[in-house]
Image 1 (cartoon, rainbow, N blue to C red):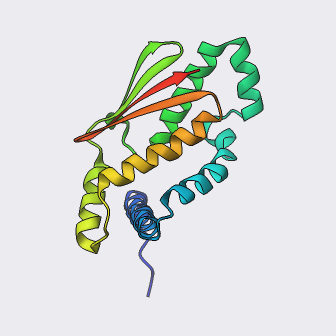
Image 2: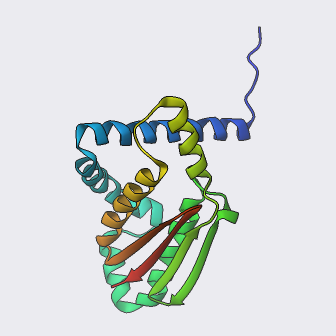
Length: 168
């Protein structure tokens, strides 16, 4: 019997669902253990090492280039981060507004993850909320970006979130 080949879109949706489930399980587990902040700090340490991959800039290079062209460097970095976010969010759900070359607002509108997490939580009985996951996700991102002299100021909204990004 021949194995049916899974279409790429279906594979992506299944992997995204699995990742969403694992992420929600991890938050629920760490909440119950009282280790959410420890887990976030651990992930921060690991993910800082990946920033050259996700942003295209290493920490030393970023600090150097930031001194020469801070606005341009900041804009390139924010654009790379939003590009990377498209692995989670459809392009149409992301919005970026520039306040200056050192400050921007990034919005996730009609966030599908809020709905996915809500459904998963109901189906599995996990003891968390989508808002809890979002609030802690932004803690992780804030910790990582602090390393680069960038401050993230989050605001969780009913159907998404808004993050003010400032270059210090």
